[in-house]
Structure formats: structure tokens, C-alpha cells
Image 1 (cartoon, rainbow, N blue to C red):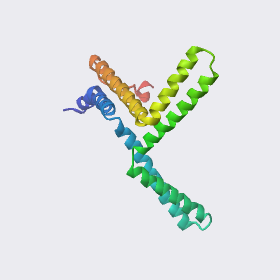
Image 2: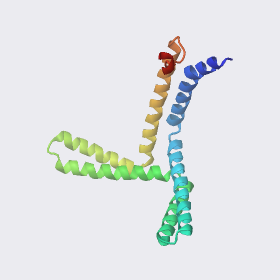
Image 3: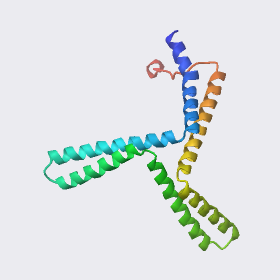
Image 4: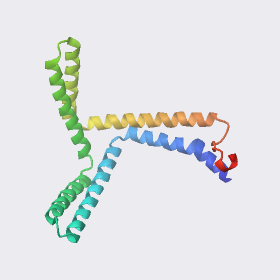
Length: 176
């Protein structure tokens, strides 16, 4: 296969297919991205804790602050690495509490029945998120997966309909 044929194949089929596979994974297993984000954040915190330890060893000034920062970062990082879905559940609960509070405020502030209806809906949604905190994460990542799948499918159809290969912009030196 020639190089142009391989790049044309990658351009036309491989990248849209990769997007479609990624979208399907997100739709069918939305917790995988939540766990990946928590794992990356956990490793970042562990690395930050190691940097704080190095700063405490190398620098005599501010040693207590560096040691405390190292303890906090290492503890939080290792906790997130052991429990990767806790971050998504915590964010869901926080969103539920905020929705419940906002729904209560709107209920008492609204003078119209529609406003009270929306406030009640927000409060019910807040209670649902407090009781089932992973729901928000799963819905968001499933919708992201659906949109990535749709973008990949549209891209594949568009590229298969186009008779030409990848468009190369003209070289600026050739134009002179």
C-alpha cells in the first residue's frame, strides 16, 4: 500500500471510526471516564506530594508548610487512587445539594405557578442527585458519548461521499 493510500484510509475511515468507538464506550460504560479522571487527578496529587517532599528536603525555609502540603497531597492522591469513583459521587451530591437549595429559594421567591413548578422540579432533581449521586456523572458522560458517536458518524459519511482525498493547502513557497 502506498503512503498516500494509507493516509487516505486513515483520513477517510480510521479517525471517524475511532471517534465512533470512543462514543460507544462512553455511552455503554460512562463510569470509565469518571474513574480515569479521578485516577489522573490522584496521580497528579501524589506527584505534587512528592514535589512537596523534595521541597522540604532541599529547602530549609517553609519546611513545615512543605511537609503539611506533602501529607495532604499524598493522602488525597492515594485515597483517590484507591476509590476512583468517589470524586464523581461527591460532585453529584454537591450538585444535588445546590439544586435543592436553589429549588427551595425559588419556591419561596416565586409568585407565579410556573416558577413554583420549576422550583419543585429542581428540588426533586436535587433530592434524586443526593440519593443517587452517580446519576449526574453517568448522564453527562453518556450524552458526551452520544455526541462523539454522532460526530464520528457524520464525519465518516461526509468523508466517504467526498471523492477526493485529504485536502493539502498550497505551499506558500510555491505561491511565490
